[in-house]
Amino acid sequence: MQSFLKFRYFFFLLLLISCGDNPKKESGNTSDEASGAEAVTEVEEKTTDQADNAATILFFGDSLTAGYGLEPEQAFPALIQERLDSLGIPMRVVNAGLSGETTSGGANRLDWVLRQPVSVFVLELGANDGLRGIPLSETRKNLSSIIERVHERYPEARIVLAGMQLPPNMGPEYTGEFRQIFPELAAQYEVALIPFLLQGVGGIPELNQDDGIHPTAAGHQILADNVWEVLKVELEKS
Image (cartoon, rainbow, N blue to C red; front, side):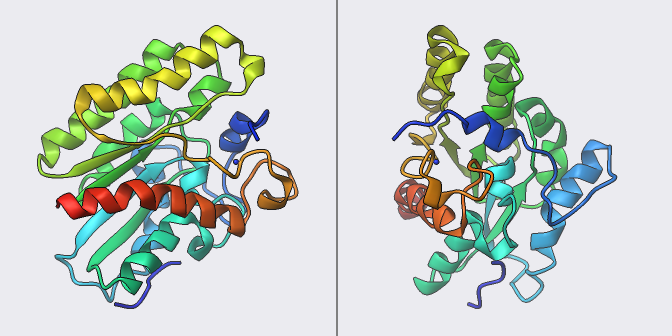
């Protein structure tokens, strides 16, 4: 199958995720449906040669998933597609990342994204909530809602939750509670957990762009490895 698309502890994590629109694309869209379309269309346009009934891995997240500052083929979801292709695994990846996305925004655009059948749903959201001081009860509620709705729409779909962390300047109580959201939800809903998506990348200058906060293409290679360690186990269960 031809490939179709192609964060030492850190202080700046949430700045990373909170940046606005990807400089490689601009959007005047304001509706949830429009933003959902923006996040998916670029990848979908590159999948026209894929079988309509191909099993789909959908990456649903913020600027990390979107590949802020990079070409689409350099972002970790595209690298996962390359790995699948090299192994002869007939699955297609859809990148539904949207820079600046919060859990609330993600919950609002979820129905649009779920119009297409999903075999594996990789959920990477929450860090922007922490930066904006959104009550963690809201973050937990929104992530729970997303997981429940995916399960309701596609009961057989496997869900992978990407764990995130906050910088220490947010305060020990807040950061500790935030960090626990992800493993607790993973246990509650019996979904797979990536302990920390940015492990081995955050805070390492040579793995981040000139702003010091967005992973480079090399950084995304490591993110892809972090994701694959968990994703491959889920694929074996399918």
